[in-house]
Image (cartoon, rainbow, N blue to C red; front, side):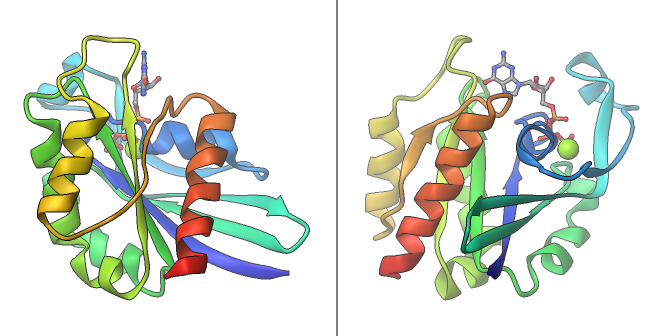
Length: 175
Ligand SMILES: Nc1nc2c(ncn2[C@@H]2O[C@H](COP(=O)(O)OP(=O)(O)OP(=O)(O)O)[C@@H](O)[C@H]2O)c(=O)[nH]1
Ligand SMILES: [Mg+2]
């Protein structure tokens, strides 16, 4: 069985920890601490180091999934977490002020990993008032000369997270 390391990133509160908790076959490792700042209005805890979960996708593939912290003050962890990864999932909160800019920011910050491997974009919070359409994400990617799947995702849904992983696997096959 091949073991693949994937990383999941995105802004604070987008649902990175939620996604790993939804999909992991083992009890996930979370490093959440109580929120102390403006995030407090949104949720009670935030990741300070990383999340980790494992999932057997099929008989040949086991995924080791690492989540980054979303908050800027923990971004020194990003490079450490990305080391040796084979693919990236960028989660984007569609209710934020400029979600397309959020996506671009993560593409810039994980450029090295993206260049070497592949990425997919999961857009969350479609059940709330969203800002951008899927087309706007595709257009933004096109403008950068990039192509990646952009998928409506609810990180609370195991099926949705599996779809993100499957899409990433498909893109990697063609990379
Ligand atoms: N209604 C709704 N809630 C969502 C959706 N996606 C995520 N959430 C909620 O948003 C929150 C996300 O929290 P976390 O999983 O801790 O977010 P995170 O990305 O790990 O955040 P940090 O660790 O702070 O960077 C959870 O309460 C989820 O239930 C969605 O599509 N719809
Ligand atoms: Mg988290």
